[in-house]
Structures are given as C-alpha cells and as structure tokens.
Length: 147
Picture 1 (cartoon, rainbow, N blue to C red):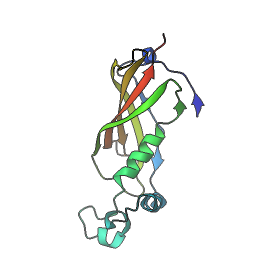
Picture 2: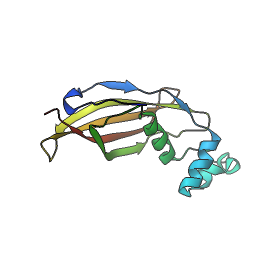
Picture 3: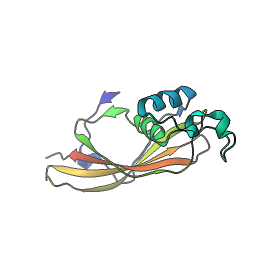
C-alpha cells in the first residue's frame, strides 16, 4: 500500500482496474458473525443448510462487501474522500472455498457542491472464480481538482 495523489482531472471514464483474489474461509464466517452478531443458520449451521436449496452455508453479504471493497484498497489517494456506496446488491451466493476478486470501473464524473472538488463514481463488481458477478455497488468519491 502506498500514497498516490490522483486528482479529479486524472480520472478517465471507463478506466478499469482488477484486484487480486481472496479465498473465503470458514474462519471468515465465524469472525464476521462475531463482529456483527449475525449467527443465522444460513451462515453457521452446515447440517440445516444441507436441507436448504443451496445445500451449504452462504456467506454473509455484508462480509463479501467488506472483503471485496477491502481488496480495492491498494493505494491511498490523499486527494479523495469516500462519500459512501449506492445501489448495493447481493447478486449470487458465495460459499466457503469460493475465491472472489473486484473489478472497478470509473462510470461517472460530475460537479461537486464545492467548486474545488468533483465527484467520481466507481462501479464495483465482485466476481467469483467462475466469472460470475456476486455483488455490485457504486462507490461515490469526492476528489480534489488540480487548481
């Protein structure tokens, strides 16, 4: 991880970056359940899940969001601030042993309330080892302009 100043003008629509992968483990399930208090059987009870349509435990959607977004944090841009996330959707289930990676595309550029800043939207897709999109969202950024 390193610092790299990227100003509003440096962002180009449709620029794309792809992260490294990360395999989801049973430990991830247990740690996330402990952090959130979400011990629902869909995530924690292998025997009960065997009787359900997916036949196995399903990863917490919030965990996949956290890990997938964490994968995108490869550089620190001191010129940008995260404003949050929009249009978050859990598209497909993720299971223990699946490997996910994130693909980020600059999808929008716009003006900000303050003229010295602009807004950037990064469309984020989290993808499993089969090439299937499992989660999508838009990351909203406020980014300093050069002048």
